[in-house]
Amino acid sequence: MANPTAAMLVIGDEILSGRTRDSNLHYLAGELTRVGIDLREARVVADDAAAIVAAVRALSASFDQVFTSGGIGPTHDDITADAVAEAMRARIGHRADAMALLAAHYDRQGVPFNEARQRMARIPDGAVLIDNPISVAPGFSLGNVHVMAGVPTIFEAMVAGLLPRLTGGAPLLSQSLRVMRPEGEIAAAFGALAAQHPDLSMGSYPFSLNGAYGTNLVIRGTDPGQLDAAMVQLMKLFG
Amino acid sequence: MANPTAAMLVIGDEILSGRTRDSNLHYLAGELTRVGIDLREARVVADDAAAIVAAVRALSASFDQVFTSGGIGPTHDDITADAVAEAMRARIGHRADAMALLAAHYDRQGVPFNEARQRMARIPDGAVLIDNPISVAPGFSLGNVHVMAGVPTIFEAMVAGLLPRLTGGAPLLSQSLRVMRPEGEIAAAFGALAAQHPDLSMGSYPFSLNGAYGTNLVIRGTDPGQLDAAMVQLMKLFG
Image (tube, rainbow over all chains, first blue to last red; front, side, top):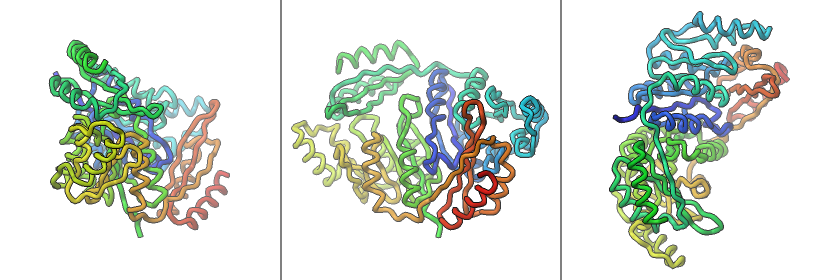
């Protein structure tokens, strides 16, 4: 059976202006590979309601699961929750469960639970909260869209809490061989090997080291037996 | 006058599987900001012809410029040139100018210019070559789509050669203020300031340091006078 598919949506002006280098995509990609959910596409959009709504609708319709990061804090540029609600045609308001979580948190800290902080309790009707063990303000799952924070430590903690709830498939396994020959020299035989194994994905990644060219050959797939058989052939060709 | 808009398309299974962390988006974002081209969206797709064709068509129709990285090497998984040709409804074949460049290069190196290497001379009709000062195999511009290598050093060299050909706008300037107060405390006043300056974009980025919460407040815009005026107000509020 084919693994479930997924897409990621990274939300934030700071990524597209070059101020911040995103790390959440790389983290999520590794985690999804581990649990057998195939990440097929990622998009990055600005803090712009129309762009977020369009991307959420397109990705939610095309993939089994959609993961978003960014835009759920207390400031005016945090518009993800409202945009996702609009995209999924859900109502949104200050939800009692999220208000209670946040009120208790700020009460413990002795700081005012002001209007800006209350914004973080805006959760669409019908959404399930995603736990935030770091700074309390929750993410949420609405249908197949999972809305999480952009701060990497919080994003990672939310992913850790969310993934056990989702049904995965067979983990994507990979093996690789490093060959000190340029890509152009191994391409024909490697391509022929890939054609023999339609269920595996084979990729080649060139590098140069002290002026010499080499290639990392990577084989990926979910069936360990097929993967091992292909690696034996690969070693015979280039090992 | 509004700056030209752009999108980036990152192509490669290795990014979506978590094997490789992309760095080209962050590099391009910084360069485009410098020359005044507004990067509005980025997408990452696998080495899959249908996915590349669909993304190139959507982005080429929506933005002034589209930059791609990845998938232009000699191996079977390098399908970007053919997919971009299909997306833009151009014919593609081994073009004489690219064949000549590559033949001379491999001749100098004394290695065979085999069929796999000749794949890198597949260039759509009507495309303009993008110089590759590192490993010779060229990128190309076809209409508003600029196709470049995925290896970061080569991608960066290609961008450096390409950008002077494109018309930019006013560079996007930014100034920032680091405040040792949590986001929820400064959100109301910061949001009100943002509402006073509709031509500027203001973002807030929380961090924690030794257990204390702080916020980086960033103001971006193309008009230095407006930016300075807003920064004076910001300093009065939180400086």
